[in-house]
Image (cartoon, rainbow, N blue to C red; front, top):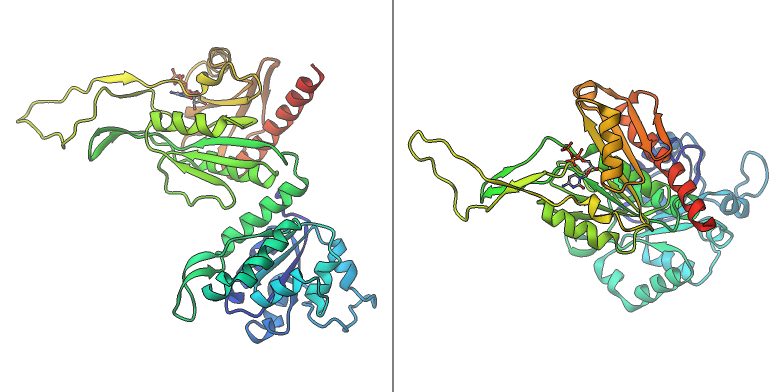
Length: 405
Ligand code: CTP
């Protein structure tokens, strides 16, 4: 299930031109199943009207501290206490200062003062205002109190100035909210997870490579789900056409050797490695320094040498839960079991390559030392989340066993 489903989110909107981006965010969160209550500051209403948010969230928009809600109970204290998370986006320098000072002079600040759950602040302002020591000190105060304050992005602002002060795009804000909820109460909170994704490219010469068809989709979706469940996630990715998931540390690599080095560094303090990348088994013995030219009608013989097996290199790391993948065309389960043993894995996810290519759905098998568990055949778009949940269930049992031992 989507982590946003059924969550009560309080979205505080301040008076900044970036408020228009948050209308999209309110819609996306609502479509993902969250109940979004929007609180506008007086200045926000000059930029985006309550009717916009009301239509997008299907809920009454709140702004006046003295206005009684439908149930007749003054809501400002309970609003903050009931929310699973409070998000202030865009947060102006003025409202950040008010929160830092502990003021309760409007509905938003009063709600935050009475909040019990996690709070995410997404500042957006003129770069000079953001750089001002007063704002820096207020941001530091909020962070020291445990609030999450995002760094604004660099770029061109509405007033034709450039610098650090832009509100991140709605997709990034949504990812940060998912990460916040996960860190607060997800089953992977406090855990570090490394996911690899995509295929590696092994250079033949400066313009050509040996590669494969991996899109990276499964790995990216696994990384996003691990983030949603509260893990600190590093995604080591070969080249793909996919956008980087928000609130995930993405390390881009090209070759298998680069991927090995990046995975080794990322795994130093990790608890789990999900090795989903399609690593090229071989690479050209030497990449030519200049473009290889055609010579008459003659062919070309490429000498390939084996790449190291990345995941097998962690076989001795007993403190790391290692998950591999096996897409096979023949003897699916026997091959998967062989790889589980040979590579020293805790779990391997097997699928029949022929039966899933070009189909919208996929049947996955979880193979571990206890046996084989089929997951129900399901649409590929849903398979990654279901798979990660199944991995987390195994991981939780594995951890409990280790603590007992
Ligand atoms: N893998 C790895 N390093 C490699 C090759 C594979 O870490 N050099 C990982 C994959 O990411 C996957 C698992 O090992 O999680 C199985 O990959 P697969 O390509 O199926 O296995 P191979 O050992 O390459 O076996 P074969 O090609 O003979 O099927």
